[in-house]
Image 1 (cartoon, rainbow, N blue to C red):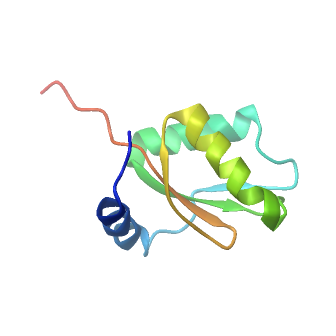
Image 2 (cartoon, rainbow, N blue to C red):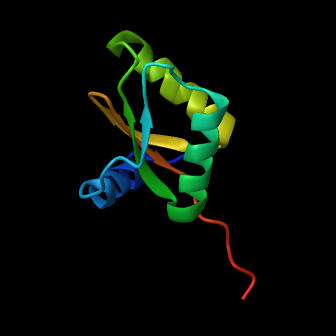
Length: 93
């Protein structure tokens, strides 16, 4: 999944009023955090994740790892908040 710049811009605009759903604390990115992010993406498609316990120079690496692990796309990383997107699965109805 590769989003172009215009699509990312629209998704960031849609995500603007959202509050972070998942908090990554001092223990960092773990399997439990990955499961929580995966569930939130499955429910909402577009979420924000707060990266608290990670120094600023490593945040981008952690977000890229999350996106790779969960087949999602980062549409924005501003300070300690990442906006992630994964299309919702199509319903068979």
